[in-house]
Image (tube, rainbow, N blue to C red; front, side, top):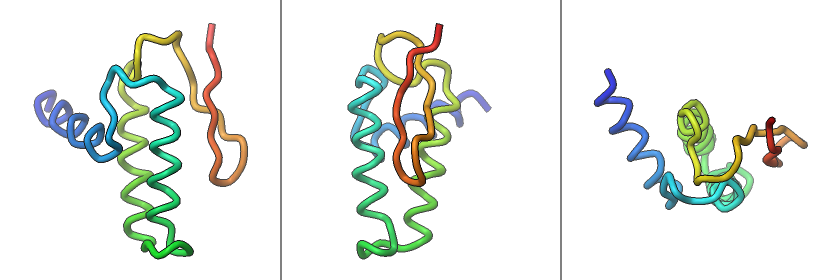
Length: 88
């Protein structure tokens, strides 16, 4: 199970064009870029859009998924806008 999880994480990082060392803000920008590209209103499909969301969810489920920054939490700020907030 752990090997499969590591394989999925590697694939998800590659999907967004980031690495575990990427900063949280850069990763969030990559996520938004992929959402815009995959959205049905911009030439994508609902399947592609959901694939982006699922991959992002798997990365966020990892302990400390991005960089050596302080612990962060994903904060929902609007329907398609997310931001990072430091958690103490």
